[in-house]
Amino acid sequence: MVIVENLTKDFDSGFSLKNITVSIGKGEKVSLFGPNGAGKTTFLRILACLISPTSGSFTILGHPQNERIEILKHLNLAPQSGHFYETLTIKQNLEFYGKMYGLEKEESEKRINELLQKFDLSSKIDQPVSHLSKGMKQRLLIIKSLINSPQILLLDEPYSGLDVKSTEILHEYLNSFSDMTMITATHDFETGVHEGRRILIFNEGSIIFDGQWSESPEEFKNFYLKVIEDDKAGMGAGI
Amino acid sequence: MIKQAWALAYKDFQIESGKKTLFKSLIFLSVILIFLSSFVVIKNPEFKPVVGSLVIWLILVDILFQSINRSLTSEDESDCWEALRLCPISSKVIFLGKFIYNSALVITVEIVTFPLYIIFFNLGKSAFIMLIPILLTSFGFIAIGLLISLLSLRNQGRELLTNIMSLPLFLPALFLGLRASLELSVGASLYDILDFLLYLFCFDLLAFAIAYFAFDTNMAE
Image (cartoon, rainbow over all chains, first blue to last red; front, top):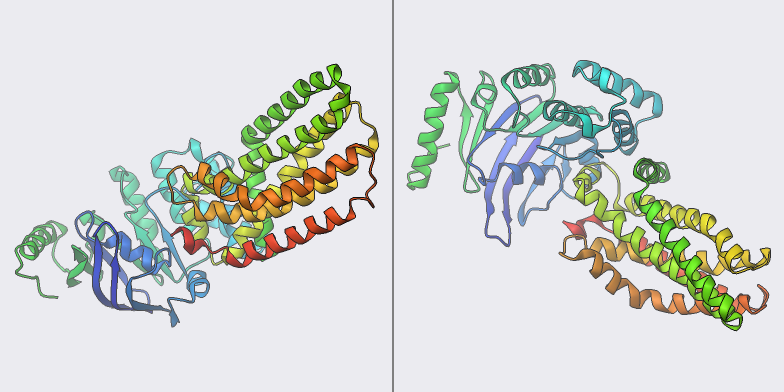
């Protein structure tokens, strides 16, 4: 479903992604961990065709990276913030994005109502986005990213800045999409470490761990910190 | 493609109709310019054709620069530029949507201010034909302005940069349009300025074609 080969991204600032090779299957739930600046967001943004890699290639659902429009019909990204016109209402924003994703009016309305209900925002439909709380905006970002019923969803720290309750609710909502491939960049061990969930640890632009974790999130945290330390010390973690 | 371009233009109208900041500032400046310059004409009626033409073109240049500058930067400032680039649409849709919105904004401001211009300068209804060179000049500028605005989107001082870079490209059309409206204001007919209009039309076509084909959002990556 997602095949990445020798992906490298160099920025003028010197920060880079180095030779990333990874393959992600249909319906897989992947958590990307790593310190700030490790390359998680860059990796997601490359997959979402927002930035081009310096070298290497990727294929999504059989479409090579230059078939941007075809890829974006089946993939979406929920960033940490932004993406909404603050003076427009939730309905106006979502209707606009529905049109941009090529949905017919009835189909778009149905989809918007369904998602707003699922994410408990129906009562706010006519409120300007500027009036929403951080948690609501976060949920709205997820709704926007689901509007085209993507097969692959990329989430960039969906729980950042949320309180415990909002995190739990959002986590529950996201888990209900069992068929969807989800790649989530996160710092949250509670939501990011689960049985059956694949974990990739990024450090300084490289993947230093790729596997699953069956023990507690607390133990994973210790493992994660050790892996990062070892990688910095040049010992490597062993993928 | 056209449907999505309309959706983009309509969204810009929804935002502008909520805030009305750009529209109000354009109308305000236009009215002030017309009002003040009409005093000059009262004292010196022989300057009426020159001052009249100049004022209407000053208003146009102001509308064009302000609206073009805001057009793409407003998307960027609200972090929605990235959201647009995430939609499965070609860059051309964004160009067309912005072109439709800016053209409609120029037409709307002209419709509101032109009657005032006619009243303050004591012109006849025939002065409305002056709108033809004005609009013809605008369409070409909007196309070129959008392309330049995209190129300068990631730069500091992008608004100034857009103005400086678009002006040389816009000057030939501006001179043609100004000359055509001067001729009209001293009594020439539409037939007399047909050559000017034809050149302006060619400028529009060329500007639109270049901007349409060159507009690629990857330029602002």
